[in-house]
Length: 94
Image (cartoon, rainbow, N blue to C red; front, side):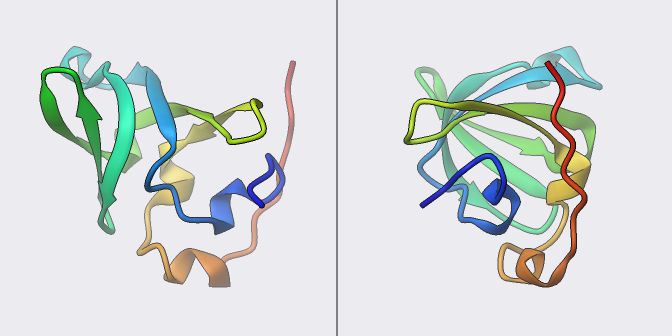
């Protein structure tokens, strides 16, 4: 089960995502994550698919338990299977 504490160690494909901060204004999209590589996330929007680099965005993810989590994309830069090996210090802000 995906929780705010373990979201970095889970699969992101299928989650609803919204980009709330980006280095380029063209990256400000929202939709469902449809694919993920080492450096990019593909978000399926109503206008098609948009490929966004992970290291230059802040994502707001809607989890299945109706909670919302903001994740800095720099923490996600790795292959999905390799993220399991990383250790993270999680900090929550209001």
